[in-house]
Image 1 (cartoon, rainbow, N blue to C red):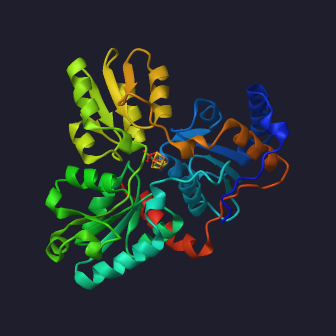
Image 2: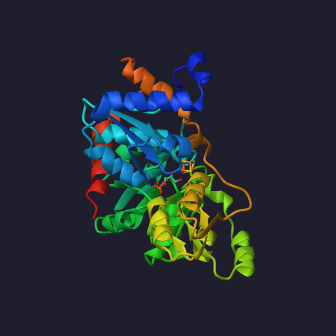
Image 3: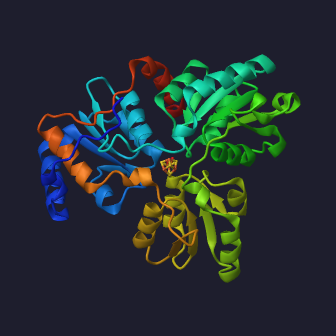
Length: 362
Ligand code: 13P
Ligand code: SF4
């Protein structure tokens, strides 16, 4: 898999924003229904303005599974484009304007480590374990879950996925985001003592045999660097200054932050809650800055701020720029299919099984 973006010529690098916008619109009109641009909510305003559909990772996976478009240009990070490639038909092509836009969290779970740990757990526990991987993971991880009776989840459906797993097994191993796993399991009533963290660099993941036997949920030791920027100290200070404030956080935040918050949910949930809130209400939001700033400008009748003194942002999402989007579309228009995301054949079928189990969850 080539993760280097195609080199962009100076003629494009020097184009004005107006010219880039014009070229994008021209190609969109020309290709019509043959082209669909999908944009994650963390994209910049100038990129998301061109998305035919915008959404969180779950919504975009569903749209990708349903679209008939021949060319799908994914403005998001690499695992999202990979997911789209897995759920689309063979005649559909998925592109990402910068294939190097990875995800720190997805990179926390390497398949070789995961397979070693799976074997290690099997030798010490006779329980039936169901693997769940957060969609923020590689296609190899999704295939691993498909092959071992598990599924994929997103932050929108992690609770339903956990319930699905407990109907089929005794324990769950949750990859790669420990925070989404812990926050969701705890919200479902699983005690913290029954949720253990597995450090792949330590024997038995750093746990005792007894704690492994008693555990209901085993968490992989992964996290999102962006969502670790939010902290409880800031929440306490904010509540002192503004007792009316509503604190809403993404479940990739630390457990202490999730516990101190008033509301927790996926990107789509955060948008729903704030759009439905009373005019005049105050909101502090713990998630990526592009989304928070867009909420702020979309709802001037509510006071919305980011839950930090600075603006945490996702460098990977920011790699998808207007210039790269324009060049991507220009090249598709010329029949030069650069930056196509093609998931390795060896993972497609099993990863699709794990993704379809998620898409069928109600
Ligand atoms: P959503 O599933 O809420 O879109 O989140 C994806 C993500 O990468 C959050 O950091
Ligand atoms: Fe990955 Fe975090 Fe960026 Fe989301 S915000 S894409 S989890 S690094």
